[in-house]
Length: 232
Image (cartoon, rainbow, N blue to C red; front, side, top):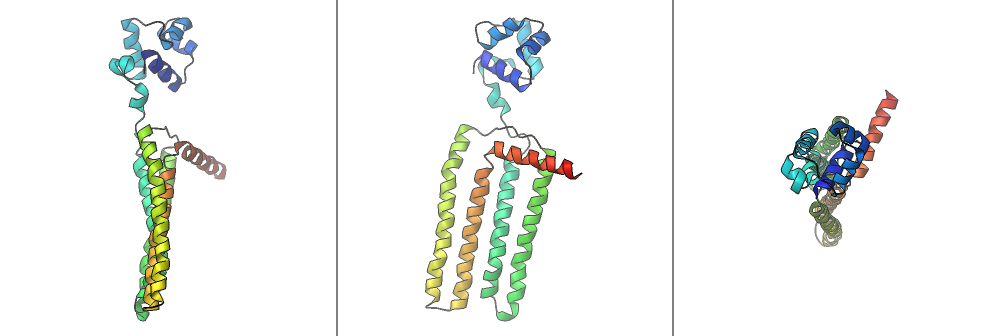
């Protein structure tokens, strides 16, 4: 980015018009317009003043890209959303595996095994919901920070996860066909296990993919805050 592009980005991000910024710098609006169009250049004392005003170094301001420097995940959004996707996917898997485990377990232990899977699955749902609500309250404003390469990689990864999930679910059909030949109850449980794993992969893939849509998540965060204020 050129100096003019960097300056325009910083000014707009700060919510300043050219007139307001010109007043802060004690110059005319025309001077600011020339700087931003790279048809003029400020004096060194003004450059230092601009650098201090927007808290950026001169090297980034003159030759780098202040936009890329500022586009970083300072609030831990990526880690939070990834953890949320994993917890929800794991919760789904455990809830589906509950009847699968009960089917495989000895008859006197089927109820115990069922709840051994179901209880932690439900707790994962509850805990992920609480943490997500807390994160929304603490960080109501989201600033896009993902680079083009990261977005491109996510676009390619998403279909792979969907295909894997569908493939694992379809594998349950093969298990059940084999179950017609061998011990049916155990094979039914194994088939449900494949379905639980496949659905978990699909859920994780979808949630992991949606985290990159920061604009959509921003709207959801704001809607949550509005509803919370209305209810209060």
